[in-house]
Image 1 (cartoon, rainbow, N blue to C red):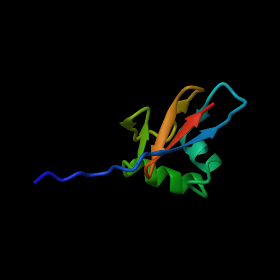
Image 2 (cartoon, rainbow, N blue to C red):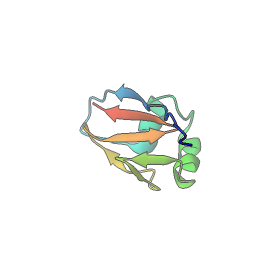
Image 3 (cartoon, rainbow, N blue to C red):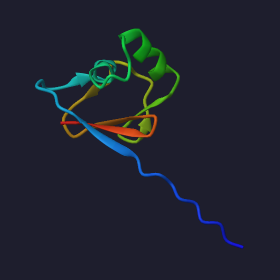
Amino acid sequence: MKLKVKIAEKKQKDIPITTEFIRLDSAMKLADIAGTGGIAKMMIQDGEVKVNGEVCLSRGKKLRPGDSFEFERVIYNIR
């Protein structure tokens, strides 16, 4: 007997910026994922956030247009 598993597609949201880059913790606040930088820091240090598909533990990671980060199966694209 074969089982078919349906994997839900990840949602995608755009985060427009007007500067050259944005720090990961600031991008999380801008996306309303974290209310404060301290909360974002804890989420990042707990390994809950991926940047460009890889777990990132650096809250100061610079994101530029074309980069993306993922949290709870939602991909946020920096534009």
